[in-house]
Image (cartoon, rainbow, N blue to C red):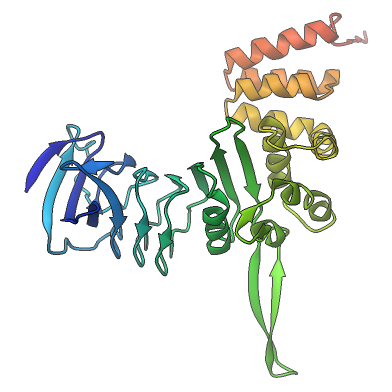
Length: 325
């Protein structure tokens, strides 16, 4: 087995081809990992069938150990602890069941130039919901694939060449076949407000305008209020192609849920987001005081200083107090 240096720890089985390297098997013991961009002067272009499936034995091929030092205190080289994965920039295809049973995987980072995804490539990736995608103009095709394969809530950040990045939330939906005994057949039902979001692609193109137009219909359905808040929030924070009407709709929702937004941002330790919320929404004295108390409880010093300054600016007299003898 040949050993080479890298940014993460990987045990690889590879096949060298004229166009690049095929990873027949890739196993890591790291929680956050990036697959090598190239090996032996050739780009990594293909993940083979079952390439990252946990517990799979090494197939026949050329074996390579990629190491960045100690293996993070773990001796489990089976991807069972892998949570955050970056794919090579020149990767073109993922084989059948490429990530099968990667149940711990939560975040995938990649370019939109992966042209082929094999059958069952994401099967049993139960926690995979966050995507960071570098865009070259083909993001709609890849995003449509993920949205169709994964009906859960998805959090997608698009990094665009023009610098107008976008962060989009795709709400969850559930498809259920329910037995209708008197009629002797099964009824097909969809629950959740996310179905339209997961299918708002036309000829595999993403239309952010069409995405924004789903907002009002979603609010008219049974929906997860926390998901709605995250959706509106990220559209305001990353206003790519945001129209004036859509901005007003999202801002009105955030305004109606300032308390929930403040609690969420404090829990996330997102001080920059809290500062943004202070500039865009109207806060009353009670809401500011409640947020200050929560920041103090969480020992979030920077956020507390920001909130106290805002409260002093708008309510310099402090809280009204009365005493009874």
